[in-house]
Image (cartoon, rainbow, N blue to C red; front, side, top):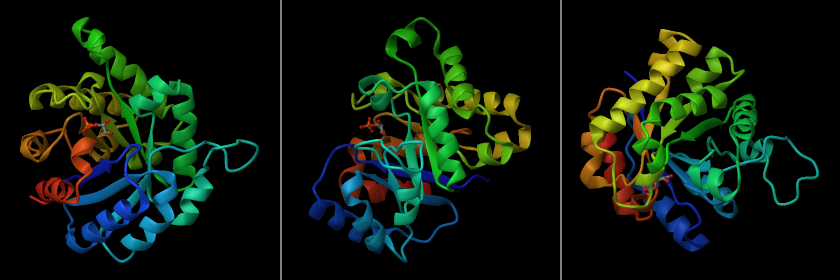
Length: 252
Ligand SMILES: O=C[C@H](O)COP(=O)(O)O
């Protein structure tokens, strides 16, 4: 049985006091569970403080992006070495907002995935299709290419430690959720693609999340699907109460 992962992606929201308050509450209330990991993906300036607040609790702290180099002349960037040093455990890579607004390519995301895993950070690699691609029946092919490119050159052991987040772009922040059956169909396809490039054992191990307008009202139905192992949540992760409800759904 795969352990579920509920990750709240705050994106570019909150100030430090709000972030601290959230994680203090979550640290107090997230229960120990062998069924679910609770992850908060926060902006860089909050990470040091949030790792401190989460210490000794069952909340893990993630970054929302990183560079692939360890150090060097990359003004404004943050490296995997820095994240690991802070006590961050996960990093979101290739979110559709990074792909669209910051021109991140599959090749870049693959370099970042290698760097994250080499530094023992768990990458949450995002893939997803646009509405035009879905309407043109290109979803499966597009996702297959994104998954293969993101995982290229990783060892089987590294692939097993990677999390893939399937986020249909048309469902992000729009209130439109893919039906749980449609979301599961794509997640099952991702597992199949992973199997073709690794093995059945690894495909059974890899955690595949769904993301896109997930909220307390729809998470149980999504998590009940065979190939959905958690969620990457934006809007509904901004309030501690709602985040805690999402985590609670993962404990069932
Ligand atoms: O990373 C999270 C996703 O972009 C989903 O955002 P959302 O839950 O606000 O639709």
